[in-house]
Length: 122
Image (cartoon, rainbow, N blue to C red):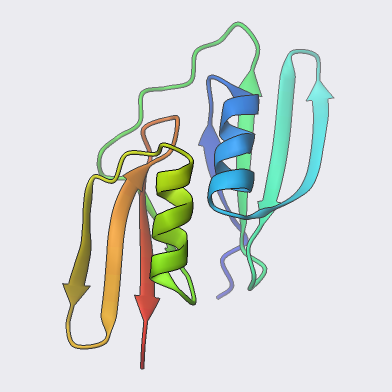
C-alpha cells in the first residue's frame, strides 16, 4: 500500500509553509482554495508521499494530539540538524542513536506536530 499524504490542519498557513518548505526542504506542489475561507497546500517528499496543510480562515485548528508524529528520512542528519538550528527551530530530543546504524532527532512543527528526522547509515 502506498501512503499518499498526511493532513495537518493549521492556524497559520504561511508559517507552516515556511516550516515544511524552508526548514524541512519539501517542495511546494500546489496551493488552492476549494471554497471561500479555505486554503490547501500540498508539499511533496522524495518518494511521492505528500504533506497536506489545510487552513480554514476564522476557525482555529484543533489542538494536536501528542500521539501524532511524522517521520522524515534524510541522507545526512548533520546537514538537516544545522538547517533546523539555522531556522531557530527547537530540538526536543537528540541527536540520538537507535541501534548501530540509525540516528535521529525530534522537533515540532508550528502546529505542535512532532517531527522525527532520521538517517539510516546501512
